[in-house]
Image (cartoon, rainbow, N blue to C red):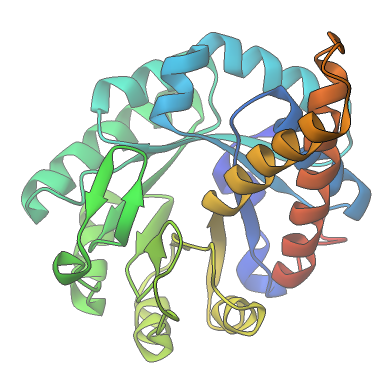
Length: 285
């Protein structure tokens, strides 16, 4: 039960009215903090690697690390490739052992987005992996992908249905008013749009741009049908703040890196614990 694909980790979300957090990581310490929080709360969890993290660590190295950590706990853990704009990288990640990949061709025309997604879905099916795609554009910055607010197009229910019918994707990220990165102003989420999309699609829906959304809005998103919620920027800040703070507390003569990075695990675990409780995925294994 420890290392699973996205379809498995999300399978009870609609029936039991909860969402699973997809938490982006940047190193060993935050993966441990993410999984520790989920294990203590008996929650399924998704650990997400961005393209830049894959470039930094390597696909096989990431799979080895996450599988090793997952095997030490009794909860479902899904390793997910987040926001890959490359069909080939998706295929390489599937071969390396990722349980899930996201092909993000949302910046392309609908026909090209569908074509790329169909190719990745067909490949993933051979290996038991799951696929997420995106339709519409979530504003803000996600790694090297920039979508200006004026260019952020909300997903229409009919387009979402057309896309799903053509691709049969496992999960679909929809644009309903959130944005990647930190918000300059309070986000206005279109819950009515979410309800209409949910009514038309049998696949799992995904919320990107989770950092800065209020707990109340998160809960309403879950209530109205979101199955997967991404959290990335907030955890990056927790990671870097933890190291900066710890560097101030230890002696300049200290040479043991663990004494500087140890608080990352602790503080990431706290942040992820809060999100799991808001998403109501605790005790859902």
